[in-house]
Image 1 (tube, rainbow, N blue to C red):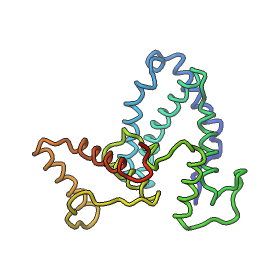
Image 2 (cartoon, helix red, strand yellow):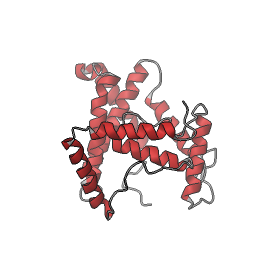
Image 3 (tube, rainbow, N blue to C red):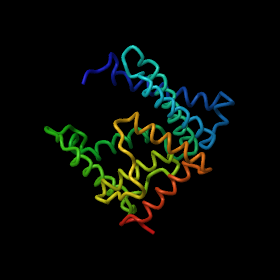
Image 4 (spheres, rainbow, N blue to C red):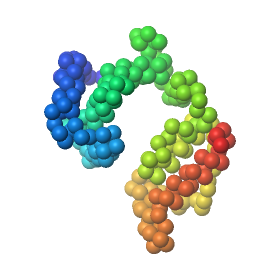
Amino acid sequence: MTDSPHGSRGLGPEFIRLAQVVAQLRERCPWTRALTHESLLEYLLEESYEVIEAVETGHTRAEDARELSGELGDLLFQVLLHARLQEEAGNFAIYDVVTGLTDKMIRRNPHVFRPDGSLQEATTGDTAEIERAWDAAKKTEKPHRTSPFEGIPAALPALALAAKAQERARRAGLQVPRTGPALPGFDGEQELGDLLFEAVREAAEQGIDPEAALRGAVRRFTAQSPGTAD
């Protein structure tokens, strides 16, 4: 992997300065000072979708990457604001967010890191083994979870919610049974998109909310799957 001209060098002082700027905005800017976790949510969602749009519209190429860099910065600003609100409340600071994430990545990726954070001499190319180690680390961290579906954000859009629930089921060794008529064959992403678009069109003609319908299907699937807590 090739480093960028800057990479992680000098990141410490620059990141500290960014955190200071956020703190100063909270202290001296009335608009920023009035923000709450709740009022920030719409901006967090908006910035997340703008990152997605930048990727999907090709702003990962060298000639267009500045657009993605800017959108990632806007998303990072949201993270820093939430962390600053918690620091003001005396709960945690951005330092705790960063160190917690670093420790988690080391702990959940034993194929890359030793427990002390140093690199393993050899790694594995077996993605199933990597997923098993990740899931085992999560179970150790959160032993109270009894279902593979716990922790999936209920606010996810219905299609993403369905995909995540099915992925969790498969990783837990659970079957994902067919729940309706088989779809006609499709070839690639474009044809699948057309099928989904047609399903939404037909739902609208019948007065059915497709988002609510798919959420209901996900709820029925997770409730009926073995190992799901009551």
